[in-house]
Length: 401
Ligand SMILES: Nc1ncnc2c1ncn2[C@@H]1O[C@H](COP(=O)(O)OP(=O)(O)O)[C@@H](O)[C@H]1O
Ligand SMILES: [Mg+2]
Image (tube, rainbow, N blue to C red; front, side):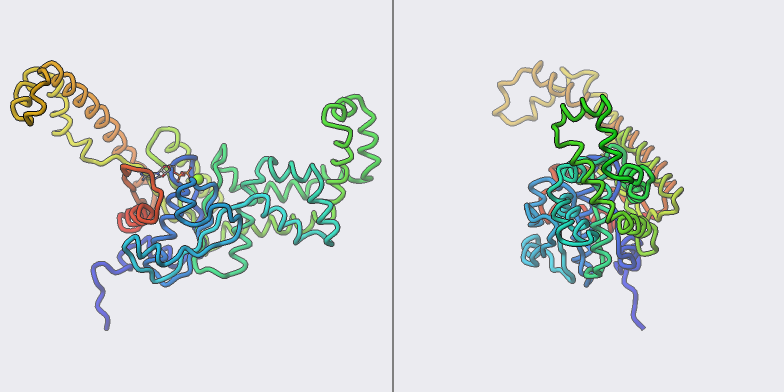
């Protein structure tokens, strides 16, 4: 019989959860640390389990991309060398692969797959409307992130895929993106536009609005629109089926969501709404990560009382402090020292206030979620493996149930 050690992964619910899942989707409001946390848990899992882990990042900060070696390589996954982990002081049991989402390349791959032949694909690529749609079409980015995930998952080359999600106006956008894409390509609107194809557009083109549109947008515009829809017509069915499968993957038993947020007002409200939306769609929220949390010691009432007393008699305290300070500072006047003390006291008291509000909100949020992990606000940006592993440790080990 094997004896279970205190530090066994079985005691860490999140590590256990991640070992049993194939897809983790990091989601949440913008700027809260989704990309960082996704990369962090992928890196940490590659150290702790003998798994082949992929992190699919979206717009990582440049220095983080450099650290993962994904700068400028588009959709191709690269192996983060074990030597990089050794340099960060750890030995991996598994492997970490990293890729960056390339929206255009992913759209092109999708077209290549669904186009009836190579020449149709080539004409679609050359069509300016296609170039616009893939670049700017609302939800193109959200959809394609899910599409890439589906593709990678279907290839089955990894034990665990951690996906970062694009910064969206609304964090819910990407959840609905596959459904909307299916609706868009399956909609009567498109079929109406192309049937009886050109003549409909030509008759539209004779109306004053379209004449003006054509003049403004260039004489080619309507022709390009007509060609775009005609060419896409050959791919509708493939697209619709595909978008439905992509949507279904989100709800599979092997997929879980990691909701990342900070305790600031707007992100925390958005995160709460997002959690409700996941529940409504019966999608599995495996983990809530509360990032950039202020240390609880800031809210310690005794410390806050000290901060307040610094503002009470700063000149008196300054005198005592000056006497204790090194000689080099003897040139400072009591008034100068008092000013510094007062400001330090004021700043600490206001950070303390934020920290105690955060503590209340955190208690409320973790009460509502099964698994919550908190990550402290680190002193510096997270730009290398060392930083990622530190975040990963907080997430995986600091988990409370
Ligand atoms: N716990 C943390 N402590 C300090 N800085 C952090 C922490 N988490 C993330 N950051 C920094 O915050 C910034 C935003 O993080 P990022 O992961 O890009 O957010 P998102 O992907 O949600 O937009 C980055 O500069 C990152 O290094
Ligand atoms: Mg990001």
